[in-house]
Length: 195
Image (cartoon, rainbow, N blue to C red):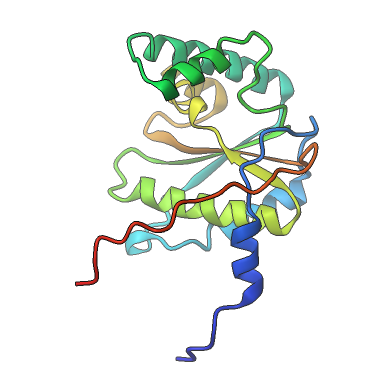
């Protein structure tokens, strides 16, 4: 096995990726979506199960309805929670014109069977591949955790075509950023030790 130094372009790509929260309201073209999905399925997968399935939502009316539903679910689920982060999120969600998808025209929902023992982990690995591939295509992405509760409601799953025996795991918006997204700082890795 060749133990060459890591490719600088991959390291650069990892460092360039951002969570973009402002998009031009247009759908990502199908060829590009298919390229991103082809990269997503190259992710590591436990026992080579490849449990992932992908739902692509580009209908703006459906995205708006889903955003409104997700906001309602979030407010209901967090009504008794009190923390600085929860209060800040509730204030954001309470704004009538807040769109949880930040006006992006494409939502990719990575799903897995509810019985897949490592389905969640596999889907998140696929999600990272998808986001890095999107960054390489000069597209923005952002994981939208606000959407998960609504996406996993039985009626919403039925409307969107998510089978009852599958769960939405990783909802990711993809699109053309409206402007530049500045880099954020990260804490140094917390190392518990070398054993």
